[in-house]
Length: 101
Image 1: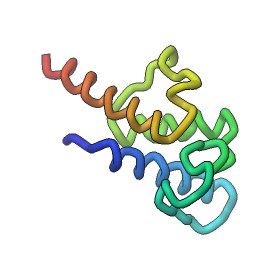
Image 2: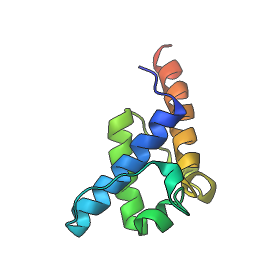
Image 3: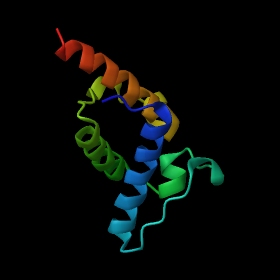
């Protein structure tokens, strides 16, 4: 099953919003990515700590059936939800083609 970049981005934001709402005991609110200033930064938008980011990445690995390599999780990939979504999309394609061999 192939998921496009916009769907992946929405899932990244939804996962982050759900995770932080549960952590803070708040109702889950998820608004479209483009509607908030600084919306693409997971740290700015959701108040992620480094532990929160790791927890979110583990959840995303499960949701997308991928494995994120430690050496690929650099500032560029983790700087924004969009960069992370693009990385996940590329990883899905790579890992899907690798498993088909």
